[in-house]
Image (cartoon, rainbow, N blue to C red):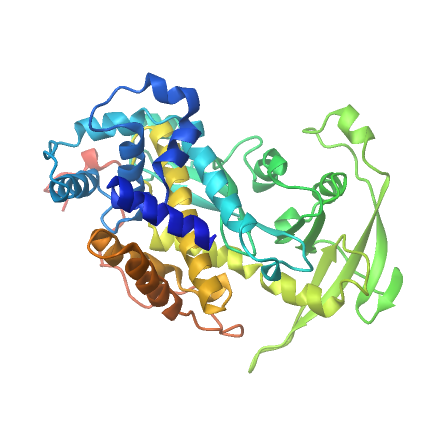
Length: 452
């Protein structure tokens, strides 16, 4: 982890690459392209330059193509090269030629590498925990985007934005994205459960999946157990719990058998026949005590059946850390401004989505390196503080020695620590009022100056 980042910084300085090469080297990008790199046409916007500029665009506060091209011009001039055109057309064309699978492959590889190079002390019982959660994002209102990701049917044409559902698998140890999916908001096989099943290949034997009660279905648990993957989820509120009926393991802790439901339409008879008729699960009741608030009772269902190896208290602490997924999504959607993408075509939208995830993983790698050197955990380091610090450090990458630059960066990133406020109450309310303008209730072309 630390060695990889140092090596990337040294390689960027040695080759005089665009300073975003300090996060991901040209060799790594070339490896992801494979044979596809031979089909690329471009003199200034080579595959690596296009990838770096696209990455810089997703990590910048401006997020515009004009700002990204201006950053490339400034770098070229600083290296004694001829400035390229400030027009964004060639850059947008080169960005459109980026293969979708290449960007997605880099996203997966960067997330996995950070976790693989992290110390084993960051794991839970020496097991890798994957946190699964979903959300939605919007994009520009163009015919192409509307066809691929239609807006909500309750909105009039021209009054809403195309909306997509996303599902992300995070590493609990490092916070990196291991895989992600994007699809329509509504329709067959567009729910978070269906999207998660398509990503089951990301999971490995002995992994532990941590999720909310949306993933507590019988088939979700059975399919994971079939691959020797354990699950910790909150029990669905519609299912009754009686701690007098199961095999008692301790107070508010029991084993119960759950019968196999009828075959769902999305599952083939052959796959249905491979699943057991009964599934043995463990139910643990968790008491959440918050100052000045009523004690809240949660029932967690898990396939970790051994109460001695996995005590109820540790399961409760681990389930509480599921909130890290919400914080990670906030970093992506709010800090990196991924809540509303900017590309006008579906393919570009997906590439922009995966590039945001790649940039997020690379920042998480820097956070992990700073946490390791400062003796902290990655989730204690501020994501926004890391982004702000890198934004100031990158332009002076070549102004000092690599060792001094790296040491100063690690010290600055490791200084910004997030507060530990586990019992803070965060109501979903806004304090700042919006401007008192009426809502857009029909297409803007139907409004005239007289109506205003």
